[in-house]
Length: 168
Image (cartoon, rainbow, N blue to C red):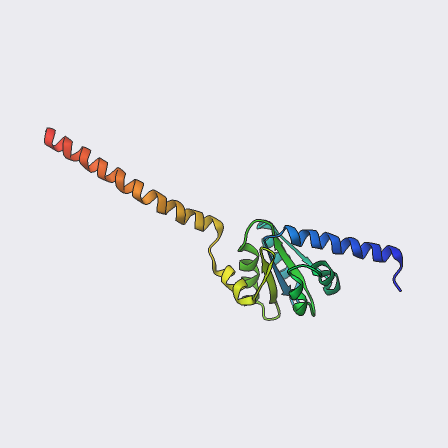
């Protein structure tokens, strides 16, 4: 029987993880077995650079952290080795990075995830992974706004040029 100190420490872990999950806009749960320390270090660095909180977690701790929430149905994927990637801002970064990594590593698999507090299937996570980054989307929208303005500026310049030719 675990002593009171150990139980109290585990309860703190459960509460901390539950708080992280509740603050995340998206989360991806992976099976990380079979990856080398070097590969794991590279992956963690990329996730950290994209403000993704990635950590290994015991299945029982994660199971207790999601108990009684809308994410409870993720319990079915909590077997084997488990790590979770959480993002508080970017909806696509964790899915994009982990999906790309999984494609290049046979033993690294996406097990499940959530989006805005609701469980999503692996197909949805893969669809998120295919979306462009926030910066690319913003650039696309900005260029769409700039196109009519640029066309208007060219039309005005053509009128000015035509007026200069007529004056000569």
